[in-house]
Structure formats: C-alpha cells, structure tokens
Length: 174
Image (cartoon, rainbow, N blue to C red; front, side):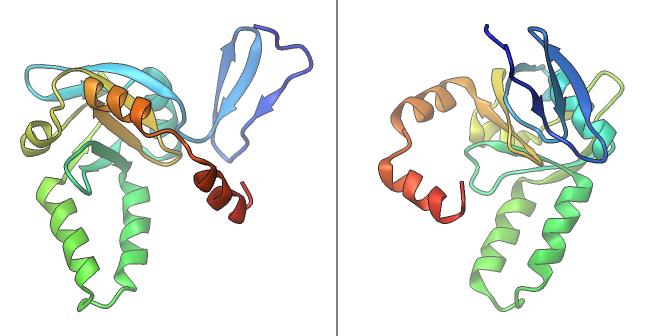
C-alpha cells in the first residue's frame, strides 16, 4: 500500500490512534467494517476498533434497537439521548413519531458493554434480523449496525450508488 505523502487525521476531543500500514490514523468516529460472532446467549463481541472509540468517547452504556427489524443498531446511550431530545420537539400527535417510537421500543433494550467487550442483542431483534453466528458490524459515525452476513452482502451487491444518489449528496456539500 503506497502511503507516501498521505496523512489522515480525524480530530476531536477524544480519539484513538491506529497504525495502519505505517499510516497513523486517529479515529473519533465509528467507521469501517468489522466481523464478529453472536454467541449462544445472544451476545456480540464488539470489534476492538469500535469498542475503543465507544468506550473512550461515550462510555459503556448503550441502547440496542432497530427501526425496521432488518438490522440491529447499537447507539452509545448519550447519542441516543440526543436523538430523543430532537424527537421530543415533534408533537406527540405526529403519526410518524408514534410509529418510530413503537418500532425502537419494540426491538430496543438498554445494556452495558461488559469487560469482555460483549453486548446482548435482544432476542426478538436477533430473530427478526437473522442475527446469529457470523455477523458484519458497520461503523455509522456515531453508532454501529449489526447485519446478518448474507443479508448485507446481498444488499451491498444489489444496491449500488446511482448518479442520482451522488447528485443528492452534492446538494449537501459532499
């Protein structure tokens, strides 16, 4: 891998440094992919690179949920509380708010990353999303997604970025 002249820095108050092929990378966000395994009790061992960022930046308390039952989402509890504060500004009569709360609470549970780096995925979510055995963990800036390996492989191969997708991103300055 040619890294001549390349420096990647992701700066924040708290970050973790990694040495990747001689390239120093400082991470403050959850990004990339990690492979993991769900044990017989339904616990997933969070990949070390993700665990370090979560624990150092947010602590060990998390909220595990899903919006649709297709995948699990692991939010550091402080990130989830910020989301709840934004959601609280939506009127309680809003149908979309009611639907969202129904989904996230149906699948959701609060848990703590244990000393071995494991967290329990609620059984109803494991069943619905097919989260068993080998799984894929994706970093999504401030939370993680846990996917059934076959489901994410299929989705990535079938759902490629289109020209319209890139145009939409350009509207947001990306």
